[in-house]
Image (cartoon, rainbow, N blue to C red):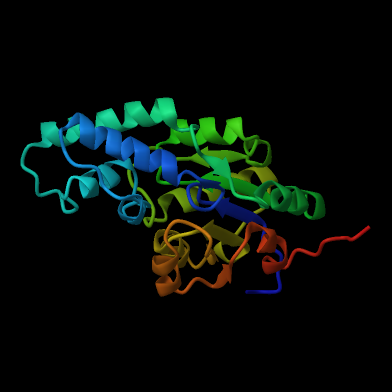
Length: 236
């Protein structure tokens, strides 16, 4: 990574800031039960995450390429999943240990660094979860998978955040001053598409996919974020 301190940090949500695996898995299996289909193991459902709610449901239905001809059936499944998840998104979800401390450390050491969330999760539950856990206090923006016409790894959302952060700061932030923090190959590819820095979280939902994508930086704990970002922390 460059010795230049980053000016914009963009975080993925699931598998990066929060562990939502149990609630996602329960919601998928509730949807499958509603459709009279057998439940799936948690590790299988976890491997389906990262590309948004619709793709998660399609994969759970065995339809990753959209080959099911009955789109009404798929729509029913997606809607049931979203309704169930809306009510149960905080049953078991928790913030990873060290996340809040790391965010506070970054803010205290470098208050000019801007932070945002860019997730493929629908935007309303993303914002509700960040509000609930008081993550939102560190964010100038929180965008979800339905905030734009495309999702990650398309870089449109990331580029929008760079433009918005630049406008707020009154000076242009460039891609090489931007870090995409995430736990899957999707986040690495999003950063790579525009020349931003990728920081991989090996503690998340898809460590094998993440490592295969070769992020610029790889950490095993949120506590490592400040040092990995080159942010000097005063000890007193």
